[in-house]
Image (cartoon, rainbow, N blue to C red):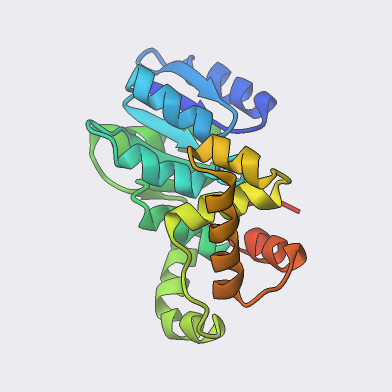
Length: 215
């Protein structure tokens, strides 16, 4: 089983690698510290599965998962996060992830989850995460009411928003996403209109709430 680790904390990647490589049939063939680097690595190395963090700079795990699973011969993706927030769990599962574990899980559970997803083709959720998913389903109507009618951002708008709130200029965002700074500015204005905010503070609050960035 060939595995890629995508996590912005090197010490966590090293720990996971060390433990996984004790398994005779598991091989960590690559590591990345953000979603964009991870996408490129997946395209290059073609793993069987990706172990994905969620809150990372430049591109979060939810949007990185969407890009990875849109590839031909896409690998499986399993989330490994310290966060159990409902919108993060539902967000990455909605994009096609095959599992979600918390970083506090035992190592044996991670190994078991990888086998369930890759060898059996099943979805694996930590017990606590399964409760989050069920709770979210039962309270879907309440969740929709709580949004106050705010339209959902497109995938491109989410990527732009994350890069903007991380301090990148319009030109820097444009270079990363292959568009002009002027186009980025137009997207930024559309995002602010959708979210009904009039400044960077409002954008940051939304991005933190949605797991696009961390405080």
